[in-house]
Amino acid sequence: MIDILIVEDNELNRDMLTRRLERKGYRVSSVGDGQQALDSIAATRPDIVLMDMDLPVLDGWSTCSELRKNESTATLPVIALTAHAMSDDKQKALNAGCNDYTTKPIDFPLLLEKIETLTQAN
Image (cartoon, rainbow, N blue to C red; front, top):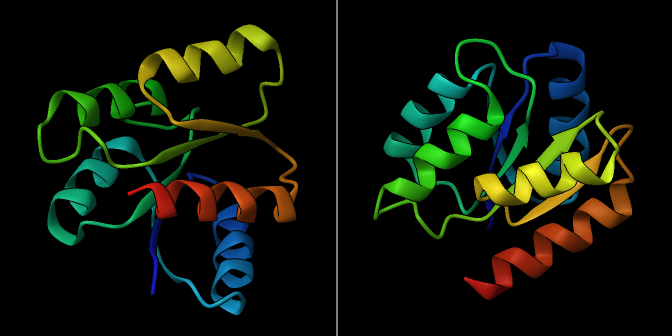
């Protein structure tokens, strides 16, 4: 079973995405900010992270950069989730170390494809 960590500060978005992913058979946990994400990843070692970029405490870009600096999380797949849809926003997320990028509102079938692709690669 694939373990997914959702990092999202909007509780409604987090709950909706959690329910949809759990219905597809994933094991899902969630946190509300980047620092909680780093702490949770260190403790639970998810298979993939779905990360909002606009987060309190530590934003998604900084959180992903921190993951890439740590040898034990350097290859952890991260998909950026953001309402920012400009091409430079996508490049900023990829430059921070995200493996892929999805805009909100989320195209759920496309997100599932990305999750499957990235978790099969590891």
